[in-house]
Length: 454
Image 1: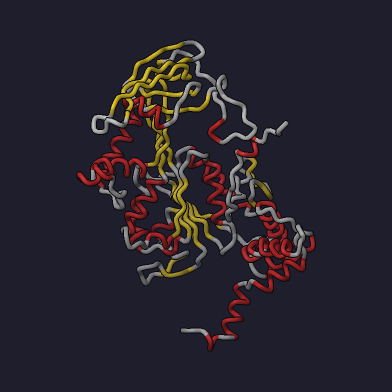
Image 2 (image 1 turned 30 degrees about the vertical axis):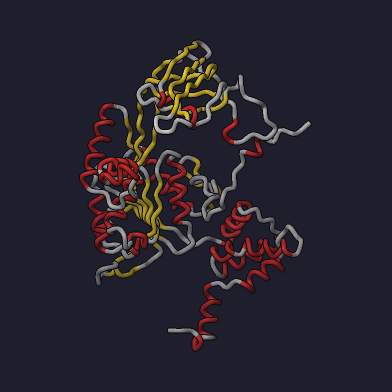
């Protein structure tokens, strides 16, 4: 007898990212656990972030922004991602680097506007009349193609739909017949037909008709036969962003005859009139109760790379009705505001700093560095000995946490090359000799400076 491995076939490859281990802020109420949800230490910063999450959920962050300020490698980006996790899966989170606004194709203000509107979600609700059920009868009638007598095309379809409580037989036209052929729908499939557009959607294979496979694909999971009448009103919920709606509106308006016939490229810069119409449509839907605005988070890392024009734009944008929550991060001290001769804390103009709730992050302790390395080792699937972990912890203290984390996988690859599945001190030393940290790299620069180009 073959073993059923259906569950294994549903697993997908997931890339291990720099912050893929972060699941939340690791709070108990408003108190931070020493280690929780993938975060270690930074107790005050995480507790402050917990208050920010509550303010966002209660709608009390209007006209304000958050700034994470601290040295490199102190968890600023990780805590920003944790805030997004705490807000929920439907809350948009858009991450942007300060350098990304300098594009040759788009104006700075357009890049920022698009990022802001990507960070505002709209949950749209629509009630539509549909026919839903399991296909228990299917007869597609064809006719000769008007221009090619050797080819046949769908003419109409006779389709029987059955639910747990009802059964109906319909005669439908060529459009619905074409949808059915395109999707390969057969007797035993559960489908939905939109009564207004005729669009057919295959939901899945009915449990009553489904074959039991030892190895099943993602689309072969049986679905139950629907209940109630075949013809019904059903609510559909879509979650889009304001930017999605902007693009849909712009593409439906512009492009001319060529775009209509052949499908033009997506609009890069969107006209302000299009955005104004989208905003009015969304507000009208909100008043009718068929839409809900979901304020998201716009996270700008290395915010000190923005210039005075970008800061001025963001300053005004905070006052907008449809503005996302803005979270910034900077690792700079007192430095020049880009585009001016003025120096300011974190390279941010003082009038904008006044609008920010500033959260400070501090360097990690030795014990915290060790705990973070243990979490990253588990996340990356690296088995490591206690002595090797001690060695990496010392490297993290003497150099940087990021450098110690970077050495994990090279050390593991060295161990595997020698036929071992556990990283030893010897493997860490080998990786240490092959990959330099910033300090050793500078020493090499000074040693061979006459060989480098200037």
